Amino acid sequence: MTLKTPVPAAGADTSARHREARINFVLLLLALALPALIARVWLFVPPWVPGVASVGLAGGATVVLRQRARGLAPLVACLASMVTWVFAYGTVVFDNPTADEITFEVDDGASVVRVPPGKHAVKTLPVGERRFTARLTGGGESFSGEVGSNGRHLATPSNDTCYGLVRTTDGASTSGRAQADEHLAGRRFYTLQKVDDYFEPPPTSVTTRTAGMLRRRLERSSCRHK
Image 1 (tube, rainbow, N blue to C red):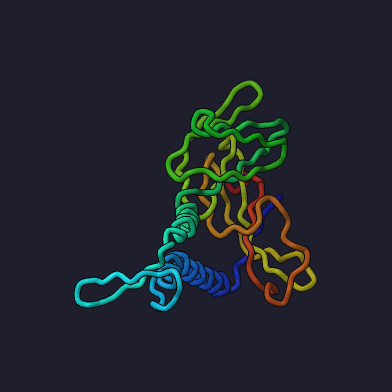
Image 2 (image 1 turned 90 degrees about the vertical axis):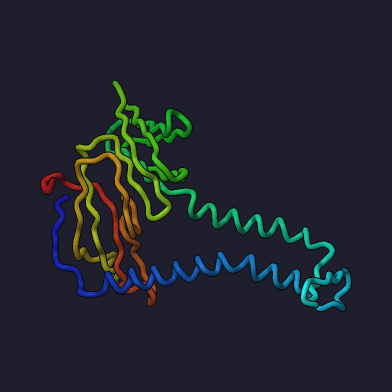
């Protein structure tokens, strides 16, 4: 496939990214504040509520604690685990552009991902420097990559494979109109930002809310731009 490079609509991509960044920031604040809010509701309750005991503190302040406040611990632990998962793990897309099955080994076999010919697979891995080995017929290729919690990553068995990041605009009657592209080549591991579709066509139907929104799709492409 030959990718063209028309000029994207001015300001549309930037506005969408800023809006998404603000939403992510608000969700992060809510995730961090929720345990404190629940603790306040459970621990600071009126003294007439059954099953509580008053404990006097310095300065004459009285804090009312539930006798069974330990029941809050599992909930707080669950919320903490959710926040930890967001920052401690990253997503890697393993691509197999060949005609044979490929087995990707992560950190000398700690994780194994098998990808059929011409397909891709998605795997969640701990953040940090990871070592990958792509086992092909007749040998294997090893490479390293830094897995982060921000965005997704692409692992491919050969640095001779080329990819394109294509921007499309959702429309009410079309599956998308190409606006611009970005070419990836010469590496086996990439960090990708703001990618909506991986090797799949954009959705054929859109709603009023999604019409006109920009999408980014990763696809294999010609190496003529390499």
